[in-house]
Amino acid sequence: MQIVNEILSLFIRLGFTAFGGPAAHIAMMRREVVAKKQWMDDGQFLNLVGLTNLIPGPNSTELAIHIGKEKGGAKGLVIAGICFILPAVLITIAFAWMYKEYGTLPQAEPFIYGVRAVVIPVILVAVYPLARASLKSNGLIVVGIAALVLAFIGINEVFVMFGVGLLYLIYNFIKAKKAVVSVFPVLFFAPVKAASNSGLFWVFLKIGAILYGSGYVLFAFIEDELVAKGLLSREQLMDAISVGQITPGPVFSSVTFIGYQINGLMGAMLSTLGVFIPSFIFVSLIGYFKGKLLRSILFKAFLDAINVASVAIIAVVCLKMGQEALTDWRTIAIAVLGFLILWFRPSLNSAYIILFGSIFGYLLMYF
Image (cartoon, rainbow, N blue to C red; front, side, top):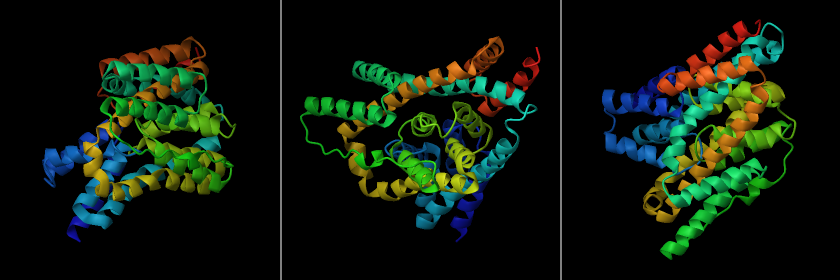
């Protein structure tokens, strides 16, 4: 019982204070569970980090769930996950309500004007290290170019990711001459009415179940599932990204904001449940297969291609957002300044950049 209470205390605190994105969250968890509490050593911690990269979903959230499971079993798994997610969700609901009530009023628009511009460099700087790390071979560079072109011409992001992933897996299979069985989630392409509560739940359930790579890939899926269908504007999507940056905890809490804009509180709750449920299921099941997966060269090849495609999709989404957000010299200036600050101070919490964008946008809008 004591260890369960310690898990609850740790992850509710992290849920309220873990700003800065997945990399920062992972660093904070290591400091707590390895350096301070000594629940595990660095080798054990890195093994858990590796496992989060083998399954879809938000990495830092899944790492929290993994740690809870390692220390507290099934109870620890549930408590760690909920405590890490819940603070961000509650704060995001408050932001979503205020945005829906006041976000389109003149007094709020100057702040939002600057935030939309600065979101672009926040995403680009966050994914740049991922791009460098993912392009590990000439074959993966070709995969990246192919994914970029396919995403740019409007091919569905899921098809792009799994398509290049499977092709690269087949390429490695031919090289290795080994047998492999692949399962493609065809069921997830069934059409749904996303404007309904059940539709929102299904949309975010399938995203949570198949999303590999950076959390920012989430917004590429939302672009295709909701923005392209007219259920959400691109401005609302950019504002959702901003809320995800200025609130603690997982960036996936932006889904709560989006669900609220479409269908109020029930939409927010069902969207949040949908996107996070797969993480709990995958972490519960991965223990049975982790040894085999970690030893599989073909699975690692598939994962490498998925990660490269994720970066390409993010680049295309940023281009589309930039076309709408960077409309004059003011927004361009805010974006360039935000990029330079983040480039030279990469460790700076992105919440400060969002704050900078909102203040600068307010000041420059009257020039």
